[in-house]
Image (cartoon, rainbow, N blue to C red; front, side, top):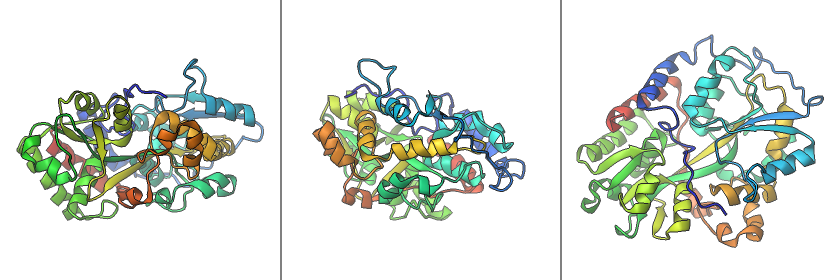
Length: 394
């Protein structure tokens, strides 16, 4: 079992090599993302599949998002087993450090209907939605994904940006909710407590990922983050602004809040479940809380880009990772929510404690309180991001 905290967040919009200024510059280009020159269609950008004659695959993923052998980190047990079983040689690259940064790497090729040199890439919901909107992602053959059809969690099916589960298959998922250090503060149950409780003033952080922070605030106001209006967004943003202006919130972070929470330098925060699990291995006083109003559910998704020439090989890989026994081995390493039904029973054989951890295998009650942030069109994505950045002082 790994215990060191990951140095990079899979969710941070402002982490990796992009700072806030770079983010706003990127957001400023979004208005052109849907122009005729960038937009592609399935008919206009056809991809040839060479899988029958080329048994290979290029797989781009985030750092530390694949199981490794504790004695030999060059070995990746589940991936090595896939290669041995399928005969497909996988070039595995950890070159996704930030969603926007990665978008910058591939946008010229995908806008021009050219190969990126990748057959599978793993990106977060909102970036997956953007690329799907631009017509840059190939549809998968559901007949070649029987494990996905059988085992994908119901809560991750039929999302607004992929209603037929043919474009973006979850690799891992996680929750954005509240966390606190019980050594320095009493229990926290609601977003409003975090934003207004006097004993927490100046001891609180929130996430610089707009969808997670604003999704939780929308829920706290009784609105649905999966379907909301601009007026409702502005109402939630005003609540956030009051907490900023009153100095209740010390700062906005990527997952660099984690060491401060562990040390007690901050008392409570908006945070991610995977981080809190890892902190909890070291200190049981670090608690993750599903707010009474609800929690945000996010996923990092496997996508096959246009002009990837090994789609069938990619489908074989995707289907393999939806075998519950394989999914359990992966989840035992990465500690995020496993999107595969049946993996919990398999985890019992590996680590019963992890099998009972609701942050890896949420129960129906927890999932019923979770929401996926609404897919945004270009105009609203730019508008909401700009407003949010202004409030958080980025």
